[in-house]
Every structure is written in structure tokens, then in C-alpha cells.
Length: 212
Image 1 (cartoon, rainbow, N blue to C red):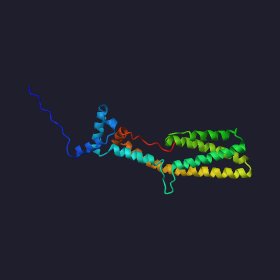
Image 2 (image 1 turned 90 degrees about the vertical axis):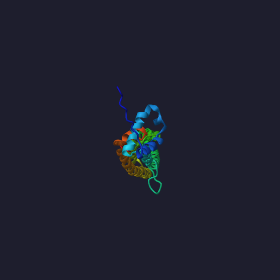
Image 3 (image 1 turned 180 degrees about the vertical axis):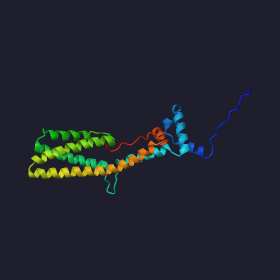
Image 4 (image 1 turned 135 degrees about the vertical axis):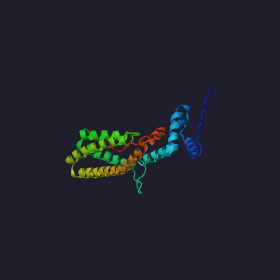
């Protein structure tokens, strides 16, 4: 009995060029034999749909950088306004402690929230949001308690420091809203098929929002 001859499938032309270019840009871990199937699937998606993992990773990194980069011509940034806000909080807590006593519950709670903020390390935007809201709430309570008990001079100091704190907070929230909009656009792009497959292979994970 004669066996039928199997046909050989050959990729050529533009598809081969696309596959070769995409394969050359793959990160090293994806070139190992154990991930060959995943890579083949990704390359097929690139060939058919024209989506590149490197392009998604670049978009991911560019969008994430908006959270730390200067966002206006004056060099203001979310992180810079966080620093101004923390400084105002520290000074307000010090004046409130002088007015109410360091043992006052609202002063201690505000100091604890500030310490947690300063110790955050590499917190992502969602984690920073939670810490920021805790600090804002604690500073509000300490300011209210101290302002009620303060003499005129200290009341003026507290008012100025609280105004600086809330001004920084408002600036942070405006800048973060712009970042959140861009992060949402990226997450929608990377969350659809076949982009979600390539995003996973290239480590372009969904971006966290400065939000609950």
C-alpha cells in the first residue's frame, strides 16, 4: 500500500517578514523551548492581526511613566505634590501637637498615617491612593481639633498649613485623574483579544489606578 504524500506548508512573503521581525524582538525568556508554543501563538497573532508585543510593552511603560513624570510646563508632578503635601502634614501635626499635646488621639492618628505614607516604599497608584486618603482624613481630624483649641497665632499657622495640604491634595487629584484616563485607555487596549495574550507574554500587565 502506498502512503499518501503529505503536503508541506510554507509561510512566505510579507507574513514571513513579519514573523521574523517579531521573533527577533522577543524577550529572552520567550525564546526557550519550553515556551515555544506560546511564542508560536503570539507570532501567529502578530502575523494575522498586526499587533506587536514590543509595541504594547512600550505603550505600557510610557503610560506608567505619566504617574511620576512632570505633567506641565512648570515641572509639577504627582510625586512632587505628594512631597509638598507630606511636608505640610508634618508641620501641621507638629503645631497641632503643641496645641493639643503629643498624647492627643487625633495628633497620634495623624502621625501614624504620615509615618505609613513615608514608609510606603514602591507602592503602586492604588496603594498610594489608600494611604493618601488615610492621611487626608487623619489630618482633617487633627486640624479641626487643634483649630478649635488654638490661640489666634497658632490658629493662623494651622489655617495656612491646612490650606497648603488641601491645595497639594487638589493638585494630586487633578493630575491623577489625567493619569487614570490614560491608564484606562491602555487597559482597554491591552485587555482585548489578541492583545491580552501578547501583553501577558511581554509582562505588560494592567495598570493600577489612583482610585479605590
